[in-house]
Image 1: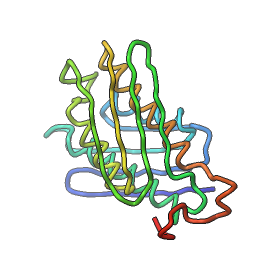
Image 2 (image 1 turned 45 degrees about the vertical axis):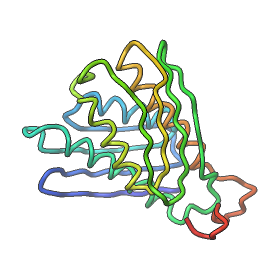
Image 3 (image 1 turned 45 degrees about the horizontal axis):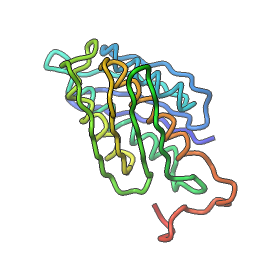
Length: 195
């Protein structure tokens, strides 16, 4: 079983997280940003990752540090759990419809962090989550894991549905990329021999 636990403490945030890549989609998420909790629970459920997170941050300032650092820790914990990445499929993509919204996520756990973010929203927030912080969350995730990630929201009426489509597409793409390919026979999925 590919599992990891991490703790990140700074003057701005205190985050404890544990992950089982080969889980059943169970989650216990605690933060003071309700919509962030909802998205992490959604990610866990649709990727079949078991995820526990206790997230505290300097929300008296704003949500930026909390959201960004959560993305960083989520990336770092996947990196730790996947270790050398032996036998993984490495790449994944998914096109997810969420009612009237549609989002595509394509990714490669390549060791080379890069984010292409193409999403527009009509409002400043969904619930208590400022939507401008989503790009920071995903940039943190990309840098923490060493992930090449392309996200596109094609269309939609509801910002809630657009964001949820992104997290569900991410979950499915990550599930595919993290799965063990029996034909790899424990090899590193790279001509370089290292990721």
